[in-house]
Length: 85
Length: 82
Image 1 (cartoon, chains in turn cyan, yellow):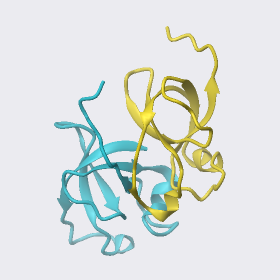
Image 2: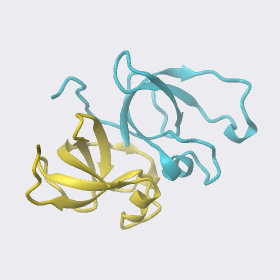
Image 3: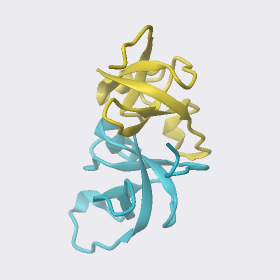
């Protein structure tokens, strides 16, 4: 699982039916790093540090075994210091 | 299976029910990368461990339905860091 920071919500109106109305978020591993899109099953707000799961767990965590997600947020970290060594 | 060093425990109160009460650990890889793994072993910080990824990570948990993609499978004794 990867530690990532929620940057903002992602707006995508034209999407495949399988995604339904699931909220999508833009997440970043570190400031200025590559942005990824994750399915939000927890209910995060921008600025939250979260753990994102991939693989088959991402599909299950997104709500169904056939949900086409490869990155899903499964939890919000209570306290995280990105500067810690 | 990859080799990591356990850096710290990770507290995550708000989590999906599918993650259960699984213990979480912050791992540092051999190239300095940071990852989070579920820990069915009970590893203290500082130890070297090996992990499995993907669906194998779920099978390595006591409950194979746990939402994880990285699970600690064992503590390595006498790992040579170099």
